[in-house]
Length: 148
Image (tube, rainbow, N blue to C red; front, side):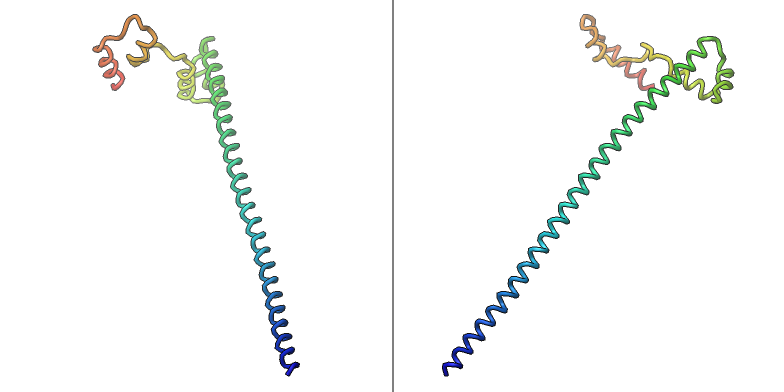
């Protein structure tokens, strides 16, 4: 019976060893799964950062472009205004530039400096000249003029 007892121990040892090997393989598989997931989430974070950086660069480029275009438009309008001040007619400027007379007139209007005839709100006028505050009736007149 001794052999029966030793074969039971041997079977138990083999079962434990087999189970331990299976658990070790499962632990290794889980570790690899975790490593793969870590790589995936890092790649996602990297992707989001790249996308955010690109959006910021694109916005900066758009702003720079709008500024440069506005500068070019002002320069072109000033050149048209200079042509007009040298005696050229709107029709001749249109012919020389290939623009329509409407476009030339629009450029001439945009080249004119803003005049003081534009109504300034009473609170801003008072801030500029503290010694003479605007009367209350003037501000309502200004509001009516602005509304029309």
